[in-house]
Length: 342
Image (cartoon, rainbow, N blue to C red):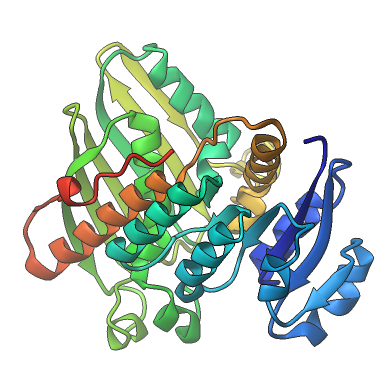
């Protein structure tokens, strides 16, 4: 297959970002994009060369010319669209999380497996060049056996109430990225989760049965201990840091700034503030992940982030939620959800 035709379901900021990253590629044709608010999409879609706009995503799934779909619609729609896309023989890229229910995720992954199509989950941080280098450093044994993992992940400002109520909560919306990154970097499954959480930023989180601040402790099967801190509001910018400490040393990925310039005067040392938010900080990672999916489909290469990775991250998020509610460590019940999904 030298060229593929794709359809994009959902034209919010992520759907548009993926479309704009894909549009310049010579070996991809974006035939159709669907969105319920079609009037907001038509002019933009013409500008980047998308041929058709529709309000009905099934127009994409029923089109025999379309080889693969990008699912960028709300999480509540993912399961049904993945199932329909798989049964239509389309390869699938789906934004995280696959769903808010590990049982439903497991069920739909079995359908994908039976259909024999590819499914990549949108955990873009795996494709960030800095984090990938940390992963490669650990995998190649440079720092020895990993002992401690530290991830800091703090947003610059909290989301609006309408977003919070439909997000699935901090663990499924925000921390799930860090749970996937933790598995990817350490190279081992998580066996136990313990969480402390609080409402320290805005009482609206409590009113919507959520939290805005959390500390997650992970115990991995290989003995590594992980610590992840999440906050919905870091007043100084988008704080994204990672460290792995091992028997032979450590490897660290620091924050990114618009430039690496420092100005030193008698008044002190000044450098740029952090990149503002995820569309800026992970711009390159988003591009790499979409290109990797397309390359996998065209050249039948293995995917970097498969459906089972989505399931395992959801298992951790689910255990984190249970730990917060009970105040106790929670063992991952992996034997119930073990899959042979590639």
